[in-house]
Image (cartoon, rainbow, N blue to C red):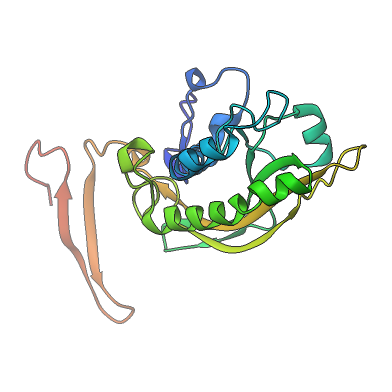
Length: 252
């Protein structure tokens, strides 16, 4: 921890950062992303778990959905062809990542804000026509569940239903779902065997604020204040005097 570090919260990032919170990656620098992934996974699995279990009960061991949950795997990256080839995820897969152009501006005189687009991909996986017919409508249901979770700012299956985003609560001052794409073929297309990967993409928008914490200013020990009041034409010098150490009366 740097002794010169700023003391502030920037979304879910708190400065100064603590080296003990890190292992082998820099992912703790964006804890809000992990929170959204975990929240949406918990809500989707809770709401659709029983139906999914019933639909997959008769599948053989070789089927990609055999013994799975509605969200079997999570990836905090954009599902590009290269990423999907190297990662080789389990299905269904939930991906979340920041995307597009973020807008940075002043929120108040002392608070900055960033409005950030996100993409949330729900990817069922490689399915034939029969599989699309059997499981395809899950995608639309996922979008509706995510919308409800955002409106309620949480879900009972995640941290006992605690509010996850709200002004002054958590790293996101606000979050909205702006649009969806699909269901249809996933953005990374199919593999060399022309397998179709069925998916739904949800577009989100968050607002995060940067707020200086009180500790940044340091302690005001033994500080004297001498304040004049007035305007360009007339002023009253030393109208207000104060001392923070209270060791004795002010001189003058």
